[in-house]
Length: 344
Image (cartoon, rainbow, N blue to C red):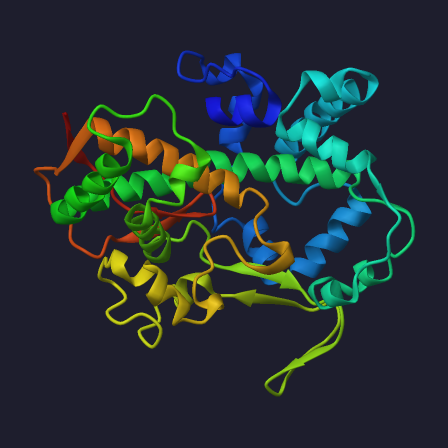
C-alpha cells in the first residue's frame, strides 16, 4: 500500500505503522475487498449485470458498498480538482494521477489510422475529430483499478509465489541462481527496468503462479455490436464471460494442469500456444490498466526477497493442489499458507 501511495497519489500512507482508522484511504481500500460472494447483491450483480446497471442509473447508488463508492468518488475528485487548479502540477508531480490528468487535457486532431480501427470499439471508430482523450470519471475508475491491481492482487500473488517456492526447493534454487547471475552476489543497489527483461526464469515462475492461481477467476465483457463467432451470435449490449480459471486449468492447453511447471512459460512454449490461453490480466484494449505496474511491483519485490531469504516448507503440510476459495472477489487459499524463512 505504501508503494501505491507513492506511485499513484504521491503520498506516504505509512501503512505499516498506521492503524486503518488513522488512514481513511487505507481503511476503505481494504474494505473494497471485504465482499461476501454469497450475498444477494453479489449474486444479483453476477447473474444480471444489466439489471444492476439499470439500478445504478435510476437510484444513483452503488449496488453494494455505497460508503466505499462515495469515499473514493469524493476523495479522488478532490485530488483531481486540486491538481487541475495548480498551474505547476505538471512540473511538481510525476504520479499516476498527474499522468492521467495530463492525458485528459491533451487533444487529438488526427484521424484514427485505418490499421487500428479493428482494435477499437465501434464508438471509438467514430471519434475522428478533436476530442478529449479521458474524462474525469474514467480517470477516477482507473485510479481505483490501480488500487485493486497494485494492492490486494499483488500481495496475494506474492503470497502464492513464496509458498510454491517453499514447496519446490529446486525451482527456488534455480530462480536464486538467475538473480545472482544478473545482480551479482553483493547485489546492485538499484534495479533497472531493463534488468527485468533478463529474468527469463523468474518471469516463467510468476506466470505459472498466475496460471494456477489467477487473482480473478473470470472476466465479463459487454458486446458493443452484434457479433457472430463460430456460429454463436452475440446481440448488442449482451454480456458474456471468459472463464479464466477454466482456461488456465484446461488439460488440452496445459498438460497436467495442476502441476507447477515454470518451463511452460519459457519463450518457445509461449509462442506455441494461443495468446488467449493465458489471461490473468485480461486481454485486448480493455485489459487491466494496472497490469504493467503490478508486474513490475511483483518482480522487484521478488528479487529482493529471493536475494535475502530462503523459504522452507512449514511443519504443517497441506495437500497439493492447494484447496482454493474466494475472498473479497479474488482467488485465495481456504487454509493459511505458511512457510519458514531463513535469512541468507
